[in-house]
Image (cartoon, rainbow, N blue to C red; front, side):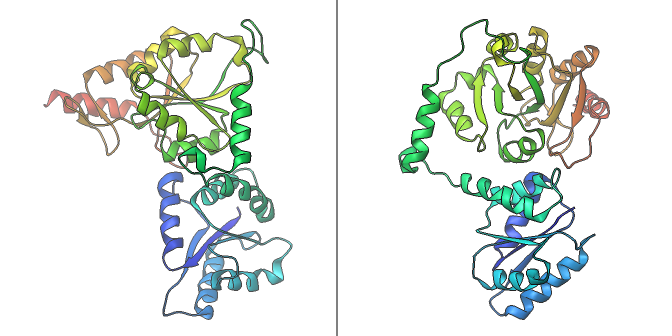
Length: 328
């Protein structure tokens, strides 16, 4: 696995390291190196050398640094001089770049390949609102996409069936862990929030659509619309990541014909009448019954926040929920 060093002036590298871990999960063979005000170039180099020595392999190393020409860059540049065939540096570090680098290690074994790949994502991660602040060429592309006509009803695209790369129950819906970690590991071309509540809430709907990661479209649809879309052969080339706010919404979609085999359980917010099962999951009696009904239908469950977490089982959590609810 390619080793990654995040390097910066001050605590920036440590902060982005923590943010990356919060969103994408704990990473092996990754280290942060910072240059503090009372330190010099030799201190940074020594930290980098220690970080490299701690990795499982020193064959492929990628440095992500804050500034081109700064001390962290210069020391990394000195170190790669003897390894130019395999080591690489990318400057202008930002969080989209770091997340993309983490995700790329699943499919790329070369520091050079990852370095070349993540530059586009780092640039696409720089956006502005209102949209009038975006460069004119970017707005032109968006306008052209909006003007493309829809396919006539009955048109069969591909095999005529949507590919569901992930179906997730998450009361937060589209947030950082989904937009980065899950999107990078499941590779959808469309994120669909399936919720009657959100579909009729203009503000929430707009915020979700704006939160879509670069290169992936986001839609918010009512449950009945999702059932209709699932049967429409025009969506045969769609690789969809579905997000449900509640297990009840997921069950209704499945009963309506949305062909899901497995559901990822990410987070369920606490509210009146619910009991906390762990730090991210709270349930009431209706939630328990809903999950049990899906189990009887043959639905499998994968309980975890981010892809790097170990897959958890739902049954022990349902048992705990029943016990807690009985003791209320």
